[in-house]
Length: 222
Image (cartoon, rainbow, N blue to C red; front, side, top):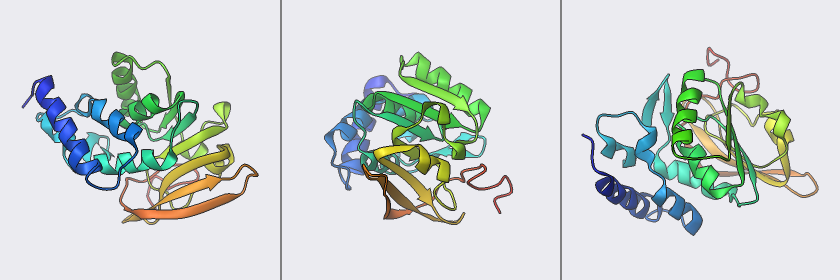
């Protein structure tokens, strides 16, 4: 059921009001960008009202687009600023990439599945984003060419925080990642002090698809 843009705007504002503001998302910049970014553009579905539901959605290739609240929580935790260079691991649909691009100076996004990367690049280009770079590769290795990054956000779960991502996090930077076994994880915020000291704090329980790569899960999910 394809709905008109005005109706979809209503559902988007309702999503922000009930699912984000109605919980613990309080950063006005985050609320505003979620209110203005057309999530339905990033999802292939016969009922585009579903794009604003309080649940994750399949996007193909065994991957999902996160529940709006979880995406907003991760974005709020890293506190992206207009001067920031952000590394995103797991481009997926490109929706969170777009959110980050509105909040930061530049976004560098790594996706391990080429068909998803190409689709996301096409959508992001159509929507006019010019501050995003997307590549296909092993996200657990980060993107050394453009390091260090002020903020890093990982949208897939890992047994532990990949060492290369901590190495590529700038002094004073923040990294958010789901960590734990395949069945369920904890959302961890990693902070690096100006002197390079690293601290980790547990924020909430979560369930994400696995992060495949050298410093994540193997293809067989052992």
